[in-house]
Length: 258
Image 1: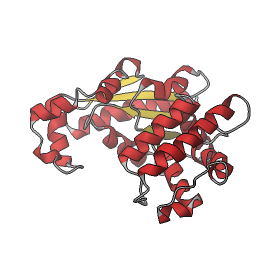
Image 2: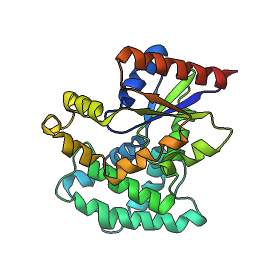
Image 3: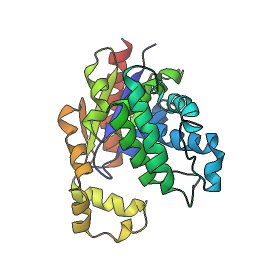
Image 4: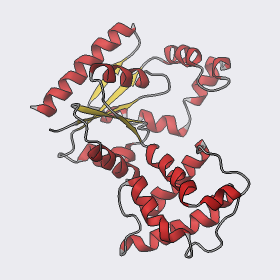
């Protein structure tokens, strides 16, 4: 049975998380996948495969120890053999050099159990640089294919750039639908303060909140709007948003299953 791959995008505090929660309530057991999942797995597998990192030691020669296991770590994290022979061989070794020469030394004094935002950003940039901009997208598709779920849809979270979903959007054989959730800045600001996910969020002024929205990353999110299969306003009551979202999602699921 085909599965609808339902992606949610939108600016900060627009209601993406609420949309995800609602779909999971309508279809219990529906899994969600984030682009950062594979990056977190990669970090975890580094610590698992190289225990000497916990002792604050970095292997001197990646050929001796790191490269032997790196192919399998990449395969487990991203769902493909990024270290295969041929065109990816050079990229693999360049990535290994980056890992040992640039990334590992950053943690020579401390290796936390959980990857920081900076860690995830660094791994993401390197993986896309050496193996292609669509690496994380391919990893998502692999995870969805391997999930073996019975529900009619899966949710893709953390969509921030068009390049992240270019294959999903352009392949007619991939049942992907992008839904963009939007709300007025003043409403998003109120929600952002109430949610207070990060220290200081409740202390932000409206001007500071608007300034955050001018960051490059937020601009890339807004550029997704013209490409969305559906745009759902979330300026009104929670009930209205739920009604609009349910109508859109049910229609998308029906189209995929017919």
